[in-house]
Length: 184
Image (tube, rainbow, N blue to C red):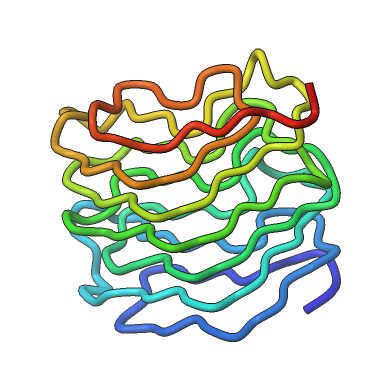
């Protein structure tokens, strides 16, 4: 998909988003929201798998992928943006059990200047992801930033590989792998 918009889902009901290539847009590559959270009228899960998101430039928003008020999963996706942005994946009040797993955030062409994964949700699972930054603004950026919605300790964040972030993780206690930055 090319143009000024990516994939936008509002109050989705049991939707699968897979096999898409979203590039050269002027906003978020993927935005999945439930405006009436926590009383989402959609009531179903959104499973996002095996997509490629190469967004940029982001003139409308701060994140390439924005997930808010929905349940489901974000798995086996690739992100390779051509430009700098604030956040790769932003999670706001996603449903309990929402899973972000086995994704490849290869940010070698575009740096995450603030966060690779921003977690503003409780009871989610973030595991087995590669979150690699380009090294630009490495001192100011955080790989996985876990503030939770109300209790960040309920989030299971483990077995992720993180490279080239000044702070690999914030409020994460489970084991993750921090790789050295070849671009320093």
